[in-house]
Amino acid sequence: MARLGLVFFIVDIILTVAALVSCLSAEEDRLRSLPRWAWVLIILLFSPIGAIAWFVLSHRSGPRRPVWKQGSGFPEAQRPGRALAPDDDPEFLRKLAKEAKDSKDADRELLSKWEMDLRRREEELRKQDKPED
Image (cartoon, rainbow, N blue to C red):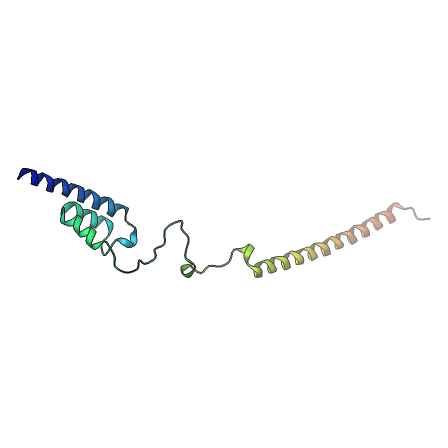
């Protein structure tokens, strides 16, 4: 009789450890109706019934629902809507080119005004330096 009790004890320990490992390494979509910490408590406190419940209730029937995993990106259908990056947005690039052209035109206009002013001042200085005959 003691041997049978020892066998049941060893099977209980193995089943509990396997259920804990399975629970702690399970993906989020596999956890049913209870959070992970609750399953761990059930497995540990109600051994071996908790371990058996984990294996029976944790397996979902039917197709698995897709779950986003960090670093895996989004499936196209679930991709959140967001604006394009500035260097990919044609409207932004057109606006930037127009602003650059306007700025260039304004700079040319300012430079031509400065040149005209400089020429006018040089002529005034030449007139002042030149003795009148």
